[in-house]
Image (cartoon, rainbow, N blue to C red; front, side):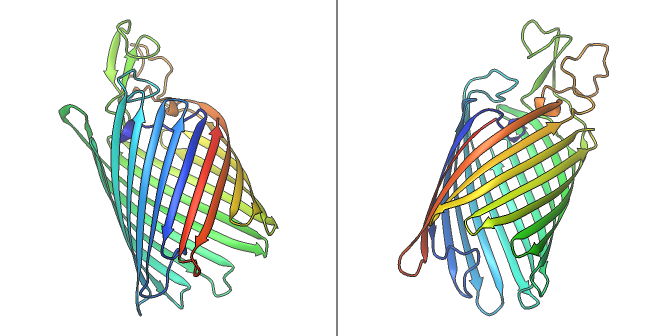
Length: 352
């Protein structure tokens, strides 16, 4: 039921428990295998709970500067409704299983790295295959890093208890990033992303009332399935700056501008302060603003005389804004004399 999920706009709480076995570093020594396990639990005030275990194993091949990654993630989602914003249904529980396989190789005296990845994702009514290619280069001075990715996906969308419903969608995209060290305490980051998606874009569980406001109720004159354009092209630009104010304090800020072919535009400023009050303990205080214009075809109420080629009840396509604040706490402790194991615990409290 992937199409009906929406990002929460209310208060939420999250607890992250993570146990790391093997090396805590992102890459181990040649011939070494590292393993990582994590459990993420999130609840929010719209009666939604997410439990997401994650397991990651990486092996460094000896002598060839090549690494292999295997990542498994489950996402157990429980909500008061199949579409918490637009549909009043019975309480639902669903599980998504995802498997990621990756292969990467270091080149040019470790200044460059190339990689390929495959992702398989399965839900009771959603199946997705995706591939990605990545390349990264760091200058010999180690002051500048370029990172590029291209990716493609093929999705099959179904509907629970409806064996005849079957839709498909394909997506392609590219991402380009630049990190530049301006001085010993300041880093600048720039990024651009292009995405295109063709095929089914609506939610199979969302219906739209015509000639009446609100949900599809017996009072609605007409009630039709949601229909969205079958092509969408997206562009996003990001600029970010981070500066160390102290060896235990840093301040970051970023701005993202987004535009797509549905005439939707958004502005996203973000500011965060990171503080380490004690050894192994980090605190983050974050603010995120979001300001969005509506899609060209979105209407709060559709009349029978309107252009009804596209109709939606998805409020994330409406004109909207939000302000969100988060407090994040993380504790990480090396275990054993050599630090080959680590335990990480975290908690997040946020509201919008």
